[in-house]
Amino acid sequence: MHLGEMIKNIRIESKIANLGIVENEVDSLTREAGISRDNYGKILVSVMEAVNNAIIHGNKSQESKIVEVNIKIENNLLEVTVTDEGHGFKPGKVPDPTKPENIENVNGRGIFLMKKLTDEIEFNKKGNMVRMTFKNILT
Image (cartoon, rainbow, N blue to C red; front, side, top):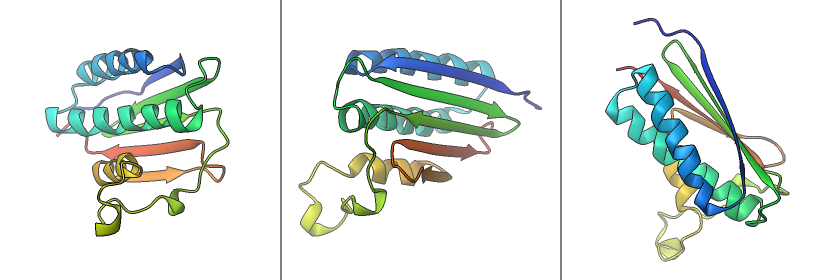
């Protein structure tokens, strides 16, 4: 199946209750695109982690600050960017949650999970935008 380009831009205020808006948009877009169930799960978990991080860590839950989610589906590829208005962070400085000394630490699990579930993940230099790519989403 050849899928044309589909684009969805979502802007939410930084409050946890708005995670539902993003989830509904991901649900409808992936359903419309015919994305497989396994890939849907990976995409949803990764996007929710990224948006949650943007709200809490990036924008410090300041409702006046916006989180922007852009989803692009083209052919057999889905790309999501999540951008916040925060000061950013250094992804390399986040402790590895799988190391024994960090096992009790809740910080870093979301990024670890996102790295495991995506085919490609990159952060901008400032650290306030993440781009996640999912390949072969229709199979």
